[in-house]
Length: 156
Image (cartoon, rainbow, N blue to C red):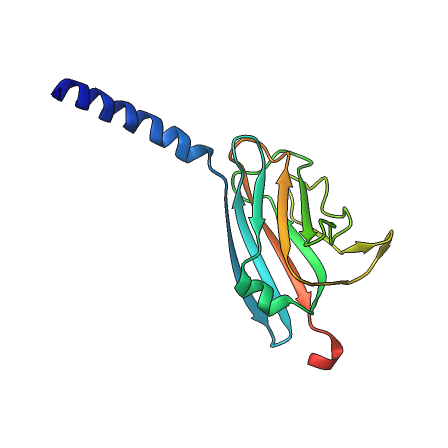
């Protein structure tokens, strides 16, 4: 019986680290710049299939709801993702609020992108909820997405 318990324990220890490495992660930090801009910085690591999914928290949504998405920055980080990885930030109606401008990101340099609405650049109002989805990033690769939000003129 002791041998069976020992074998099962050792097997579990060998399996757990493999599963832990397969799990994606995304952590967000929100801060203000000059009492005007709200900035959300998401540091992420992809799943073994190259994907990441992150839902903006209720706290972050309460701070940015009613503001407009002004710009996003991406940084490939130390364990750079695969070249031409893609990011979308979907509204509660599954509409990419950046209109595709966060597609085909560089794996070597930081980049910026404005929202695109109906084929033209423009600020995008933020409503109920946001969901970030990353694809084609590679096996457990990482990076940073920084999104700048601007309050409407009446809030300034």
